[in-house]
Amino acid sequence: MTAAAAYLDYNATTPVKRDVADVVAEVLATGGNPSSVHRFGRLARAALDLARDEVAALAGVDPDAVVFTSGGTEANALAVASFAARGVARLLIAGVEHDSVLAAAAHAGPEVKTLPVLPSGIVDLAALDALLADVRASGGRAGVAVQLANNETGVIQPVAEIAARVHAAGGLLHCDAVQGPGRIAVNIPALGADTAALSAHKFGGPQGVGALVAPEFRVVSPVQTGGGQERGLRAGTENVAGIAGFGRAAVLAADDLAEAGRLAAMRDGLERRLQTSFPGARVYGAEADRLPNTSCIAMAGMRAETQVIALDLAGVAVSAGAACSSGKVRASHVLRAMGADEDEAGSAIRVSLGWASSQHDVDRFAAAWSELAARRAHGQASIAREGM
Image (cartoon, rainbow, N blue to C red; front, side, top):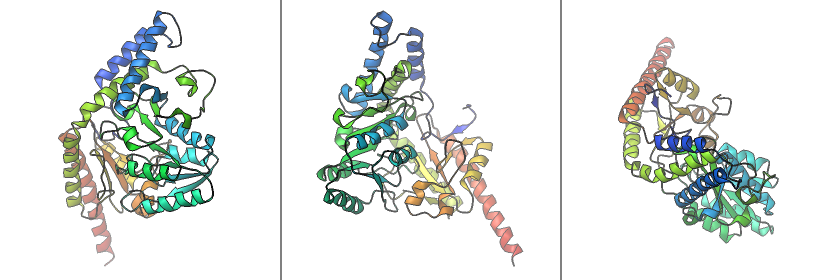
């Protein structure tokens, strides 16, 4: 990304912090396999152990609870696969979950039921209770997946309350907490989740490294075998340099929490400006607790893909409500789950701020988006005149 561009897509990936990049470069220069017993291997092992301590401190767990993975997607897949391995009879997956959770559930084996959400994006707790009771009445055990905060809307789920209900019914809870660190406090024991996923590149760390946090390893079963790494739960030589960067990013995430108020003020001011320039604009999840950096806003009548491309040409980087791996934009399943129709869900974009975001970036986006809104309004007026 260039200095001239306004990068407002932190929920997709954050710029790597300089201190993190320095740590990664230092470990790469040192070399060594952490499974080797010679000096270079011991240095690699020391870097790995330090990072495990740092990530564990971020999550509020013992270091033994941290299993390093290639990212949040693998961590989610490992957790969901473990549900099946532990005899879960039915998976209850919130309709707003990340695609990695939805895909893992579809291939896990047990029956999958969608856990509905309210129009606010919050899990319907009454529906959760009913689904849990149904599973328990059949003599089975439920595996539930509910994210900490949504990647598209920023809506924060009441995970601790959900965990209490799941455990009272004898079930297990996985929490995709990828979007939390650096934006809100993340303490896995306080949340009550049996497992949780983290990803370094969401808060200033390198891409391609994450962790499954599992305070009780008995709920985890290995998917990738062939070696004894990560206590036998994730075989393969560890990405030592990436993990070291992950650890340093975890330490720096505490500093980012102090920026939450600044980001929230910029986000709220931006939403007011956009709704003034286009009164029909809708902010999704605004009635719920949200991450301080995230805004999901729809301009009805203009496709998200059109907005993203036009904004990119104006030097502003944002995301559509959802994008598949090919980069093609599709209507957001998250917004559909919240009750939006196909057209509404297909006109939403996501603006996400982060540690290097400035008011200038926000102003640049607001000007470019308002110009799009004005062009849309002018086009509608022309159509109306022609129809008279």
